[in-house]
Image (cartoon, rainbow, N blue to C red):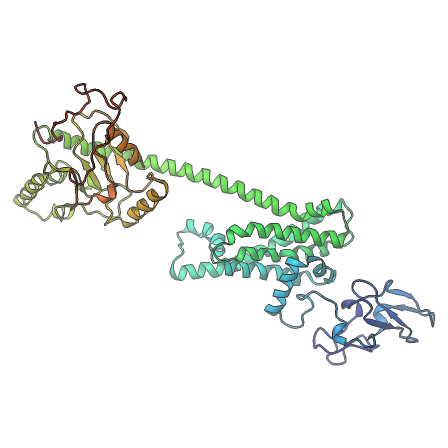
Length: 525
């Protein structure tokens, strides 16, 4: 038994103040190993032994068998049993509450180990009259440490609040958000523990709890060691829900021990709130996914409309020019038939450059003379040799081998694909996504195809299946078609033979079938 302020030994004292620092004390404030302490009557020194789980007398107040005076445990003189070292008299207590002075990380660590693996001794060693702020401090510190070590949870706590304000996690802002997130996690726990305790105690009232609400509050705070599962770096969000369940199990065991209620009621009080929280979180996550999909659908429709208009404009102008002789889309831009912006994917491209023959047409239109523009247009038209199947200009892919008129409205003749050099983020996303799932998704490389198929994310696999049914070679991933590297007949594999009876492969000579030696559309004839 040592002073909790100065650690002075308090054995063999009749006075109830520490001789060293003057701090008052009572034997009931300490816990001892059973039968390790002799309690001496202050009148006649008759000795008694503490037999309770905390080493205290049972009962604590009675008449002395020798002098018959009324005595109380807190007025008796205490000495260790003969042959027992005073350090061996101390029972396994509460490392967090039994500490002296400032808290140390070792005290927190020992309390957390007990919270996880020995909840009953931990709550048994907790005085009902201990200040709630001390056990709350343990729960707050545990949440803050878990948040700090998880590396992700601070951002998860704050970003939903800060993102609408335009605050992003980068540089100094990221460090500030991290620090504030750790602090917010602790403060959140300061609010959750009393609420959790109130709900648990209300459930316990039907089973006549044997201890006051403060004991339930201590139990909720001290059983929160399971929250450290949130603190596993990078994986905390996968293990954290298990930490909530662990918290509830530890609390249930504590409540069963201290309130002596039936096990089902104790487990309902302990596990009910975290299970309900997990279910609410799952419901919120599902609702968030549904909401995100609705937003994506709305965004797709909003982008698809102007994109469809642009694709239609390009295809109409190109087809009209092809009635006499094929024109390069870059030539149509140079002569003013089409605006330069028509070759930029709206809302998706990260550049305004429209490259053709190594020249940025959008930047050159205002600086070139009429003669220079005519000469460049002529060279672009001349570059369309018979072996070129598809070429790029800006974010446009022009596909030349579809017959005119087209045998199927599903065949692409003009497609949007953000230029991979100028839009590396889109190109990288396209490559990783296609590798993972085999089909493109919104905002990746295969963007738009044909005026009747102007929707976000048409599948290149499906398009090549349609092309094969018409005897056309499959297209490569559109991001591989560059301004200086068109897709040609030498790089195209032979088309896969198809069943002549299929609807997409009408017999030769019928409308919609490309003649074997027919010209590439737009080249005249």
